[in-house]
Length: 94
Image 1: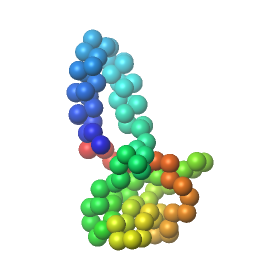
Image 2: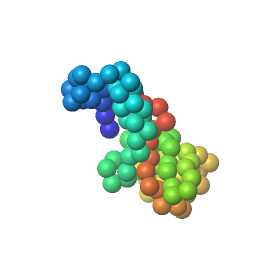
Image 3: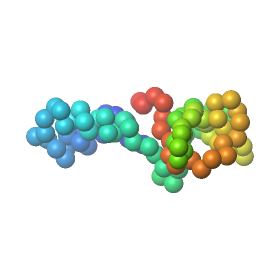
Image 4: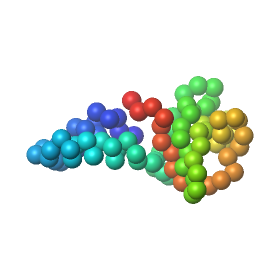
């Protein structure tokens, strides 16, 4: 996933004459993107788990993490995720 800084550089290269309003709207769109599971999974950072991320489902979302030890996706309380995950996004962007 791109950092905010890289996204800003890429946007500016493609649209160097756009106004600040358009740049702001592009930043908002970038921050609101959901990442598909096919494109990328959260990085495993400690104890075979990812940091907590927002998980998107068809009619709701929750906070969860990915376990790399065969347990799969878990919600904030440690329960297995039984719904189809449509996307995810980090809670904090770097």
